[in-house]
Image (cartoon, rainbow, N blue to C red; front, side, top):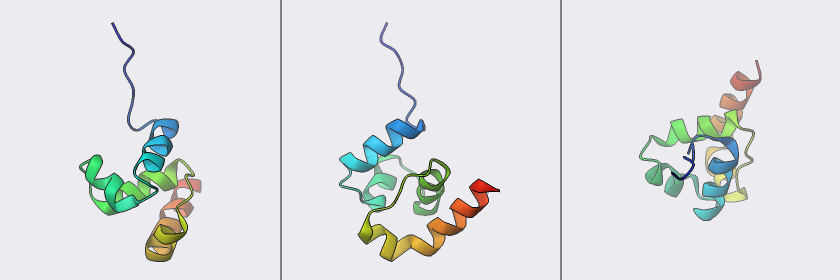
Length: 70
């Protein structure tokens, strides 16, 4: 029996973000979840956004990151 991979594990999430060419929109489609939920997951795992995603979603991401650190 093969070991199961948890897609919400921080390392798996970060690797999948890389596979999605560090594009949070594409990653949220892969995970079949809302864009805000994907930003929240990335923030919870301290996965830095790409420069392009930071420009588009940085305010929302930082808000989720502050909440995760409280």
